[in-house]
Figure 1: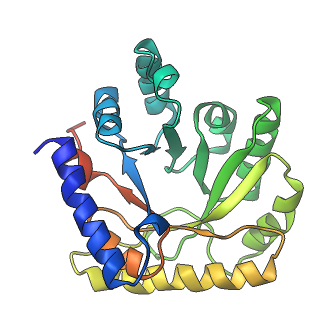
Figure 2 (figure 1 turned 60 degrees about the horizontal axis):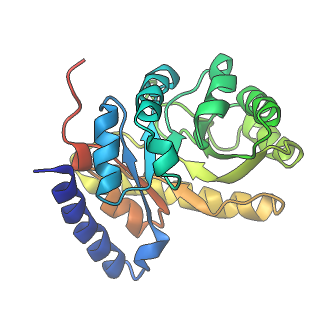
Length: 239
């Protein structure tokens, strides 16, 4: 099936899930995770209606961006936004702030400081999400709840004038049983609500959670942004 066909089927599923959860379809934003897929896939998905994309690696997206610029993609398609959703090392912060429209995987105060400095130098406001680690898996990144560093980051964020907090992000352990993801999504929602009360100067509207295999449960647990790769682009190309 084409990307357009995949998106049409996905849209039906998202709409049905929103109806079941008594939510407005407009309350859930779809991000097409284009990591490992070529720039042509981004162009094809854009033509099918996608306006938000997620990329994992700075170097990979830098090459794609060059390819897209050579085709005048950004000049002709201004509404397209590209977010960094992968683990970002602080030494890549300056390049990430230049390349991306948002960094959705902030997991340290050091990284936030560097992104803020880089955004200031670029004269831009950079939206961010804080990545929260709720899984015991070592492969997962993020700040764990109730840690000193998370508190320190939240206390300092109002003074990082070039960053705009949009919410929280998490990645639960993979399971074929969708219900295994629900406790993680529910925990992130409850954490969001708690932090919003504790830090009224910050915005916690966004909940970035749910992927191709579990987005329906994420929507039921109040996700505002779902990150879909395989269901749109198919299996990742072999590396």
